[in-house]
Amino acid sequence: MGPDPRRRIPSGYASVRSFPVVHVESAPPLDLATWDLRIGGAVERPFSATWEEFRRLPHVVREADFHCVQGFSRLGNRWEGVLLRDLLARAAMRPVGRFVRVTDGRRYDTTIPLEVALRNDVMLSDVHDGRPLDLDHGAPVRLVVPAKLAWKSCKWVRTIEVLERDRLGFWESRGYSNDADPFAER
Image (tube, rainbow, N blue to C red; front, side, top):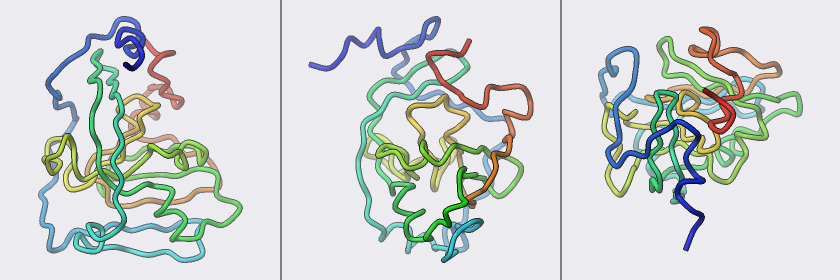
């Protein structure tokens, strides 16, 4: 038996069974025939992957809790996807890389420290609880960063960029904590 679920929920948060939809703008239109993922920045081998190429990459399954600054936690999510560290390894990061910026290709972005990006549970997920990710939750691919609040788990991912210096993302530039620790926030 795992840890007491009450200890897995930040103070003041409520545990939910559903997976609420929270975003500022409407979901972007999705055409898998033209979708691609681009990886660049401080890397030796920038690359892009089409949807079919992404689906052929080695996928892993991880179970993780999900905490949103809106005051809810959804425990025991089953995420399937490609580990971010595997994508970064394929791109051959340069030693100057210290941060990883992820964007939706429009105006939403977030940046995480390299040591977080390389964790064994940080992934680009295309499957949630055994079903393909739906558009409202970030399809076709969403970043999942279990140790951070949900705004670090960028939806509708299109680009990944390795950076030398931190860059505040959409929410961080509006006053949200850059650390996004669910147990230190609120």
